[in-house]
Structure formats: C-alpha cells, structure tokens
Length: 67
Image 1 (cartoon, rainbow, N blue to C red):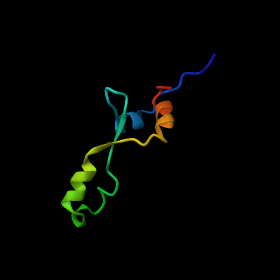
Image 2: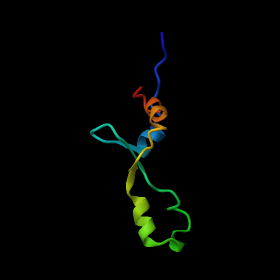
Image 3: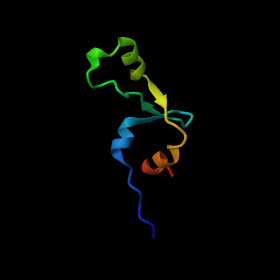
Image 4: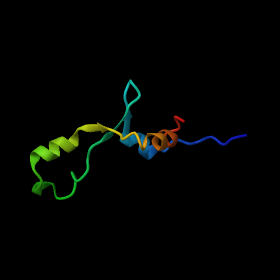
C-alpha cells in the first residue's frame, strides 16, 4: 500500500492555479528589501503574477499532490 502524499501548504499559499491549468507565482524578486531605493515602475512590475517556468512544473505538481 502506498502512503498518501501530503500537500505542501506553504507552496499552496504562494501559487495560484488558473482555469486552464497554468501555475502562477508572485513575481516578487528584489521587491521587498530596501524598497525606497528602487523605482516605482519596477516595484509595480514585480507586483504582477507571472507564469511558473515549465522546468519546475513537474516538481511543483508533485509537491501540491496533483501528480
């Protein structure tokens, strides 16, 4: 008998799955530390979600229990 794979809740909170099955993550690279020195345009750009790269999708689906 196989053991059940538990969903990694931390990942589930950080990722949104669209209706078509795409996995979106928040685009927050370099947007938190020392924000006042960064341009407002770049901070807005990093606020938008972006699609997760296809090389990590297999791993992420396994961690979410979507196999």
